[in-house]
Length: 284
Length: 270
Ligand SMILES: Nc1ncnc2c1ncn2[C@@H]1O[C@H](COP(=O)(O)OP(=O)(O)OP(=O)(O)O)[C@@H](O)[C@H]1O
Ligand SMILES: [Mg+2]
Image 1 (cartoon, chains in turn orange, red):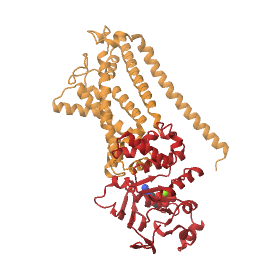
Image 2 (spheres, protein in one colour):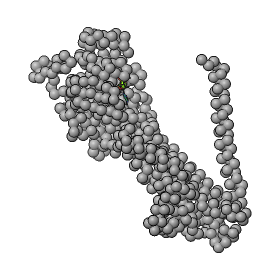
Image 3 (cartoon, chains in turn green, yellow):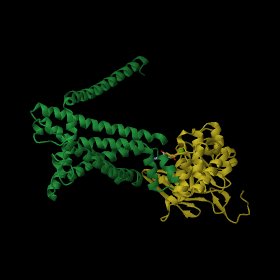
Image 4 (cartoon, each protein chain N blue to C red):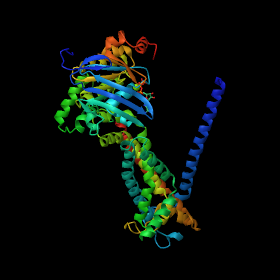
């Protein structure tokens, strides 16, 4: 048996390691946010967030990135919304309707694990070839479909994990009251409601920040994303294009765009936390 | 309670029980879980309007036996059930058996209380609501009646809209009982329903169950012999997946016929 001294030593080593990684993560976060703020803030202007790119925007002249802001918001919210609408029923089906441990349950979980891990460029490439085959050009719709497919596994896996944390007795007492599977499912959803916001948040973060998935399927455009069958701009791609420019002005705008993207995500995070905290009332 | 003048008698495990169409009859029940033989050749008639306790050492199959009665065992991975369980003469494992309907007849009181994630009122009203009751007045009536039934009304009548999880564990368990009673079951199943409760709450629940047996058939799993003795009319002793002894409480606890039962009752097997 290890004596108290060595056990305490282990405890302290573990503690130091945890603190170190904590500091590293927090440090990197500050470094990233700091860099974006330092490099982007001077270029962030009302003009930039309220105007479309004017002639010469990409060589440092006037205009803004409103097209990309709206494009990303559009793409992010619609895809996340669709992924949630499709993903939650899938997770519910796998946990409530499919028999525990059955072939269908096991294979579908495996498939969603794999889909979860596939890089978005693969989704983009596959969607792109399908679109070519169907004669559809790069468009907002193509992007929405691709990003929805990309985020469904995130929703399914997160909700699935949440449903697994529910004690089986809750399911049992509910069905003992004569509840149908659908009614049981509704109780389970109510139980995990705060967690669902987290799932949506994760999906949204992935959806709005993805570059590879939209590169081939959505294209880019200087116009407002009004028509679903036309190419649309997105913030990550706008950042990418501007950052590749040799002109310092444009590079600065890339950081300003990154700042805008960060603000959007921050805003969504705050909203989700607020909504989730409102749901805790009946949590067991 | 059972007049010997009952027309029909049935032999179960060598004990004669008068039967006036028992609520629950188990015939040649065998349960395998992932290939393991968990319940072996169970034949049993559970007497109506009385409390029957299932006792036995840990892992002997008490919970499994209880769960086969309302088909919650269906949820277990790799389970295989053969034989039949007749509830009011209808085989719940039969081809046309409808699980939702079967379960409604049997209230379940779990080991720990599991209030639904909603208010106290909604917990009790949940069952009647899903079964189609929409009238607010009637729902209010049901909630009050059932909360009074379990002696919770005075304690919660001013905070019916509060979350059920704010109640103490003992109150939650009584709430769960009220919630179960609100769907008008015929049978109450309890799996160590007092094991998470303090002595006072335990006593409250026990008294309630004794009170309720005039209207319900009650089956309890317990590993507390004193509790089995306090509340039950009949005892089923399960050992290693088999029913070793079944009879009147005094008979099984005070004059057990079987050697293993004797040892268990004396506390040699736990
Ligand atoms: N889901 C399961 N998978 C595999 N084996 C199981 C499962 N559930 C129960 N068993 C086995 O079935 C047997 C009976 O279990 P059961 O839970 O019915 O026992 P119990 O008498 O209720 O015990 P306790 O007093 O500890 O609650 C045990 O040997 C257990 O290991
Ligand atoms: Mg048990």
